[in-house]
Length: 405
Ligand code: SAH
Image (cartoon, rainbow, N blue to C red; front, side, top):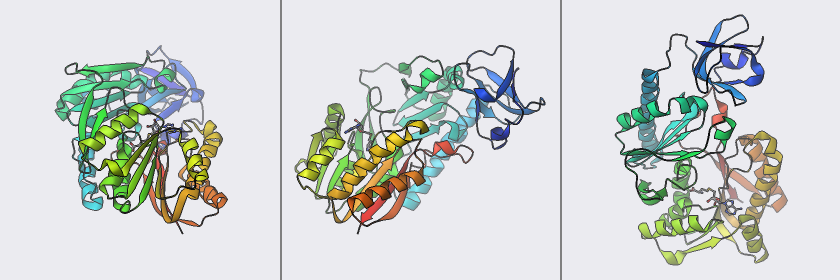
């Protein structure tokens, strides 16, 4: 076994069971491990700390598979981890149905959430009979074929589409890859129909954002539906219509949906037709949300509910200040457009922005807009995107439902 020996005092994160070893913590590498090969991590006195996958290119030099020296990293290991991950999903879906009545057939949702499921660098989403797999680390890449075979066997899915076309792969020295990994080649773009909260959606798994759908917003989409009745709703960054269709299904008076992508809006309109929701209540607007909000402000247009679900403004904490200005800008404008009693549903999915910081930004925006407002709910990612307590970085999505007094 290859050995990675840490500098004195650099074992603390592993004692807390954090699954990453940074290059700066390493004193010595014994042998010449290949990309993704299994290595043992030892402290400066030679005591075993963890077993993980080596990534010679990445700043995160080792991602831990196990903290147990008896565990062998082989097919049986991945079988067990995948089984646990999949079974946990079934349990959390049952729980959320009972507690929150957000219906989602077990056939759609995230099956594996990387580090938080003990499988660093591996994301697997299920859309009906299709799995979409994202391989984000050298270790997951090395076991990709084994994992693909196991996933088919454990889920009974018909095919696996790979969406390893994510920039972070470059940090691992891995090429971007996209295409069918298991099952028949289909016509491109590959689209799958899913059902969420009783609404149908087309998911473009080959070209859509992420793996095709923002599964992490499932519970919030149900909340929006519950709150939208009778309101004039503005859905900013509407993508394929997730919040828009839920607002319509919740009997909103009208919905204005804004996105900069014409393709996303076209797919959203297809999704509206698929569910036979009223076209006269909806206005699709192709444009930049920052501009559209200003135009509405200048035209004194107002709404009863505004949803802000922007893309990641700060992928890393170094970009947090610049991102904060972006969040402040759109939240401030939204507060100005809300009627008294109006509701703001606002999000940040930036890893570099903490929940506490995000709340401060929203508070600053309300102050500058001159409105009094209260948080009525705190939101996060759906339970099929769990956050391992030893991996707080997993809590990337934070949101607030705020009521203007
Ligand atoms: N709310 C959606 C997900 C939003 S993803 C859901 O639940 O499915 C972010 C969306 O913002 C993408 O569709 C992207 O096209 C769009 N977008 C990114 N920058 C934008 C901008 N400046 N103005 C308008 N839309 C933008």
